Amino acid sequence: MGIVIDSSVWEPKTSLHIFIFLANFLSIFLLPNFSNKTLTPFDHGTSPSFLRFQRNFLLIFIFASGMEGISSVFGEFELAYYGVSREQVVVHLCVGYLVAFFFSAFLGVLCDLIGQKKACLSFCTLHLLVGIWRRITLQPSVWVANICLSLATSIFSFCFETWMAVEHDKLGYRRDNLIDTFWLMTFFESASFIGSQVLANWLLGSDVEKSVVSPSIANVILAMITIIYITKCWAETPQMAVFKEYRMSFYAYIFCDKRIWLLACAQACIHFSVAVFWILWAPTLVADGREVHLGLIFPCLLGARMLGSTALPWLTSGPSSIRTEDYLVYAFIIMGLVLFVVAYDYQEIGVLVTLFCLFHACAGLILPSLARLRTMYVPNELRGGMISLSLAPANVAILFSLVQGGYYRNIGNATIFAFASLGLFGAAGCMHVLKRWGKQPYENGHKL
Image (cartoon, rainbow, N blue to C red):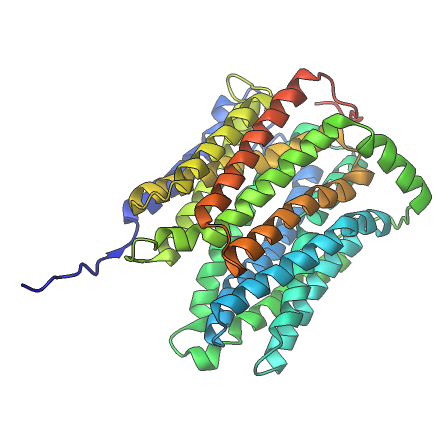
């Protein structure tokens, strides 16, 4: 008797997408009815000048997130289209994180010195150059694009948050409005990544050979629109900081305070765990040999991240306000437990997708919450340097995992997940110690 092999294709049910969409909708639009603040992001009582400022910034940030999303989605397709082998893909990733490590150590400092507006323009310029390069070259240099996009991603990780915080403080708006902008940034960033996937798939269409450059054209258009919008519609007071004074302030406020080291450690741990997840999630889902529609799972993960970001205002301004460090301890522990389960090579796809959604929901809550803590702990003029330096050890850990696990295959995916899990448990410990050490070393002049 012959053996029949099941060739089923696993894909999430449509009800899951509908549930995530409705949960996001209800979480946002029911918030004003339960918030204990006098103002919410959707309250008509908010000052018109702040709403104008917030909407202009979020529009720029959505365009920037769209460029990042298209480059990420199209970059993976481009490697497959040109027949790049698995080993070359690993080398490609290693070069990207190596560039990120070497430049992230001082990119944030440089952007603090020259101004965040110029840093954001540099980010757009890098995407513009890569898009033009891919358009005019039939088979572009993957290495040139990889280096430029790695630099752009490093700048994206801190420049927009820092620029928004600096301008917000300069204009004298309330800090609770700034916190609202943080979770909205995470929300719209995830939404932009979903839109980038849809746009890239639509541009590629059925004739791949003719439309392979279409996503690059879309990135060029987005970059040009963003550059024009930033240049014409957003003013920044030209100010070149003195490096000697910056170095003294950085040493006094950042290096000499252990509490900021704890915050930087937590940021590095979540950066490492999220990067590891995006590298290994697809191989983990297809480990049992079944075909999986990853393109349908991707929106679920980012939708869960959006839902997690909407939980921030509920926790901080809902019926029972909770201190940031308190809920971050539990969020980090939950993320660590998720990766701990995955590290045991669990292969039931439905359970894995559920765990992955929970992972991203916690990430959506943690990322804006850490930005909130940075507002309380770190002076705005040092913010970019602090963020970029905190990402340097994470990039080293990612590079080590790629070399040892992906290239030499000395360690398995389960071991890498376990390392990420331990890092998240360590981040929970950092938040616990941060709470016990009491008052913040730096207080912004605008009260809540």
